Length: 157
Length: 157
Image 1 (tube, rainbow over the protein chains, first blue to last red):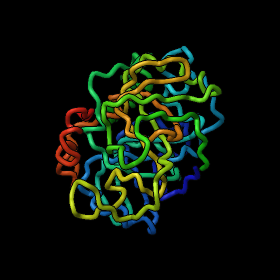
Image 2 (image 1 turned 135 degrees about the vertical axis):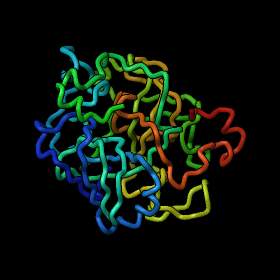
Image 3 (image 1 turned 120 degrees about the vertical axis):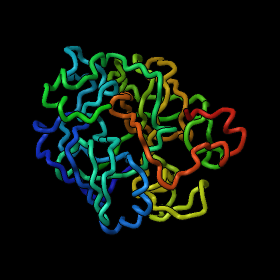
């Protein structure tokens, strides 16, 4: 199970300290390697894409994780922590524009230089769920955790 | 970028021929390896999980793909074809029950024996999008493509 990069993510976030978890409105550019550009045919018609990438700055993981949301430790699979047994990241992003092998997207929290692994079209009929319970995540208003500046530019809906 | 399995998926689907694309209502069991069981703490509180797995029966990919939805070829990244440069699968599933290191889930289209790579909690505030365009996928009523039996047991919403 060996992954190969299919491109690279260009982001305004240079390090994890400056990178807020989940979806600001900043713009990122996804540069798909030219050898894979043919695979982008017809992608322009989708307003939202699912990006998969390798969290290359992920550090050693722990199975028990503390998050900014509360003071209790949770199992890593019950969190979105980047430090996981397999450092796989994913985001649903808005596709703003395509320019050849480059995709301009909004709502991505990856770091500059993150290796891109896959792109799939977002299909709400299978990817969007209703009547959802979110367990210990009682506070999903990220502005309360990350401050006002996050709220002003937040992407979450 | 080497993935390691964190568990295995037990599914009623034994081969790709019998496995419909995307989300029937059949029940699957996710068996997380005991060494990772601690990472499941508090997962019970989430009604929906995002599963990532390795499409181990995926064959050689092509950048241009024909699907059952229409007769036109599309770029592989504009489709959900399992034959991709990185054979990464993902599904949003409903968590029915947890029994120790085993999770009973609904809405998964993976094959028996599929290696599990990651589990993340589904958070609608960041994972669910509205005002979505789905490009060339004009027919998302899977029953029209896969027949009545699919409609009767379909999971898509």
